[in-house]
Length: 384
Image (tube, rainbow, N blue to C red; front, side):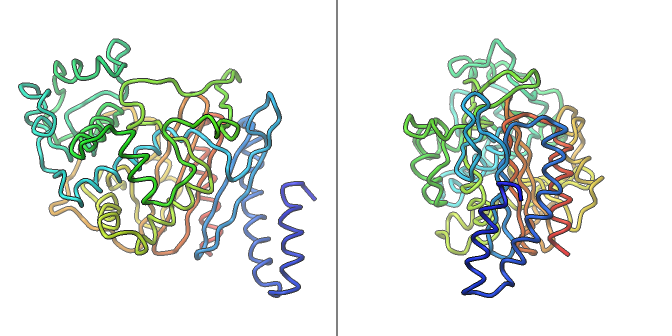
């Protein structure tokens, strides 16, 4: 029996004496499904370590594979900290939606009315919502090197000229979503890092999620590996915290997924914030754009999910069809988000109406398509 299943077997053997065998049979079924999906992709993609967390009908399941660091051989656990790249954007949008629910910010505000330093620029005519949905007019995927620093990014925004009329095209963009988060923090009267780490994360009950990993938690911080198998971790940049800066564990990410699926235990403004991030603002093909989260009617085909998480979707501009009014979360919707840094790859997907969700964290940046295939396989099997 593989080591990773020995602990589960021992626990199940003990529990069976007290609780019967039904729960252990369910755990065994989940383990069989997950192992069959994960082990081949780890080998094919040469991924040193992965942490998988799954919730099914309120029951959490954790599956840990490989090592957090090849240098010291530390095993991955559900508490290992991974960089989650652009999955961070869903935290940023939740913070902004919390500012809206708290009366500090309006999605219809013009960006320059929130940040006076932008007055006289293109942002006099670009709304907060357009920044949060990548539809400001063609902001690029990344800052140019000359502007990729905190003290230069405002100068870049002041001189930037739109490629398209605001609100007409989706162009996936770190500067766009990053500025969205920056404006949210400005509206709350604090730095983004402070308001995220001292307000939002505690309210979500997340104790091992960080923008800057504290020294006493560095032992849990996985080492990432790039395509050349060199050890790397994310570097600072302009609006890095807002766009791709979160480091977290599979256990905390599963709590976050469960909060998104069943927010009723949270305070009212945070419930409203989550509802705002789950609202559909426009469509591009089969994908409905929320704030941070991207949504699909469920059940969804693998081909549809792959198209929505493809390189063309991330790199090219796509004409949008706005939903007027915006569409609140409906039944049978899958929400998802991918995220990558130079040495890490993450994917999160959940279906609130089915009470099922998955977190996939890895310390290598491997193709989005492989993450989506694994998640689709597992969710489809567990939904039967």
